Image 1: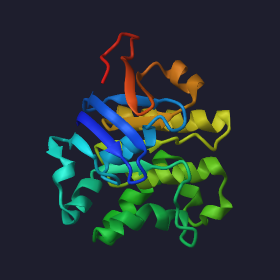
Image 2 (image 1 turned 90 degrees about the horizontal axis):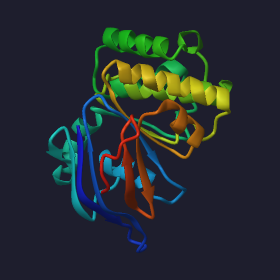
Image 3 (image 1 turned 180 degrees about the vertical axis):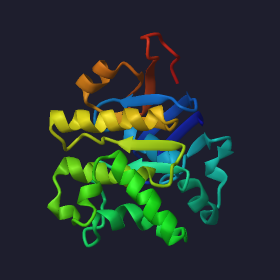
Image 4 (image 1 turned 90 degrees about the vertical axis):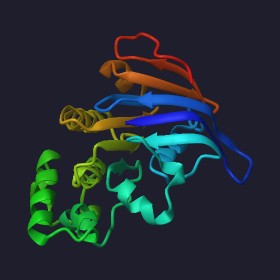
Length: 229
């Protein structure tokens, strides 16, 4: 599903965010990216959906070197990738339903199919009854669930989550992680960048640790090293 080969990213400011990263993620895996703030987790995710391009090395998603895609080809890539942000990025003047349906409408999906998929996504995150509310009327946990619904409404095979529980209380954080687990069980490959050690330790999934932009540890679900990038 994802393959990084000797990937490095240096920003114009001179900051080296990622150095020599090698990583393979198979279809259907659930992987945590961990590390302190500034370790390179967010940059690594951005490289995977081409919000940033690698300075060197290659990033392959489903066998495609996404660094070689033209600007016109990026929408096709991003239809296959759901992204969840810590700060939600919801449209404040649109209802919950409209936020989730927005991407489908942009793609020209028929109205009946938009309604069907949006209702299904909202059902999955237990928010159907909130469809007509505005984001500002929701709690932080509810807003994050809207983000999840929006990310999966197009049934992408890959879901990238950048600190999805960073602004949430512990109980709500576990609600989000249970939803991500359900989505993964439906066949979606899930990567979660987080610094929530309690959740990572409790869930016992594959853990990729970054430090100073380098992958320093890769531990499989059973606690055995996968390798170091």
